[in-house]
Length: 137
Image 1 (tube, one colour):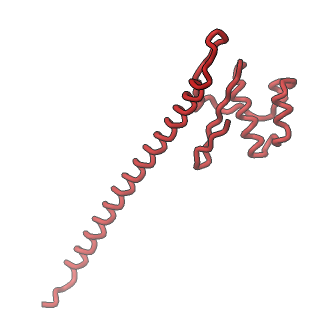
Image 2: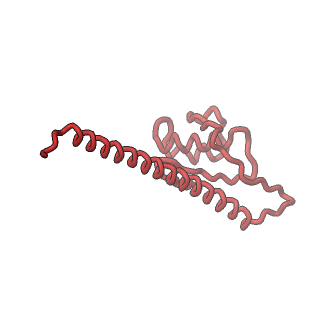
Image 3: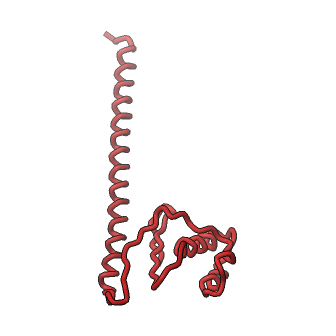
């Protein structure tokens, strides 16, 4: 799944029954490369995902590991509850929304503080200019 985060950011949610070393990083790197169109085209993705090609056949770079989050692991004997899985996804999305809201509030506070400082400076400038002007009396 792809969740648009805004501002050019996105979250990629990958569900696998098993993963090899750097598998998710390679898949996401190939998807990004196809989206950008620099070393892959979208038409080449199915061939890469077919499982018949080696890593060396993928010209795209693996994405960096930072930002990757393992949210849940299910084992065969656990009989995963898809409702619990959906809850984990919902929790992750809500966490990102709270983080973005927090960033937005912080930005608004900084903007208000800088505007207040600018307004104060404007008032000081006006008062200073008025003080410099000779009085009419």
